[in-house]
Length: 87
Ligand SMILES: [Zn+2]
Image (cartoon, rainbow, N blue to C red; front, side):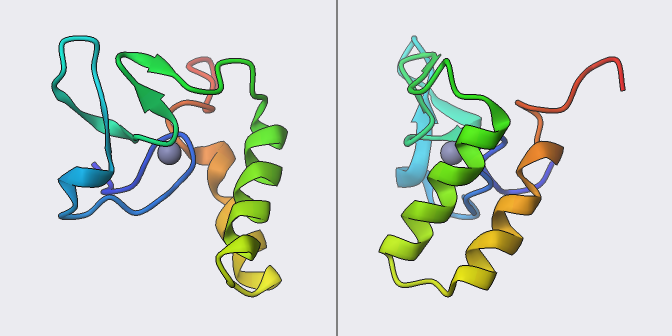
């Protein structure tokens, strides 16, 4: 299991504070708290393209170079939330 959010790709390694929460209050091993709280996605209607745009704008806000933001967003479709079980 990669230590990154399986929705937005944010690194979660060794940082329990960043983990999302399940409906029973336990930490999610898969998703960060930006994406997942109390057992539900915070942006349930996002398409993968919307998530990519969202992450790029967030990273730019935090001062990341556009290229780095784009490279990071490019991996999002491979994450568990977005990968089709049929493929
Ligand atoms: Zn996330």
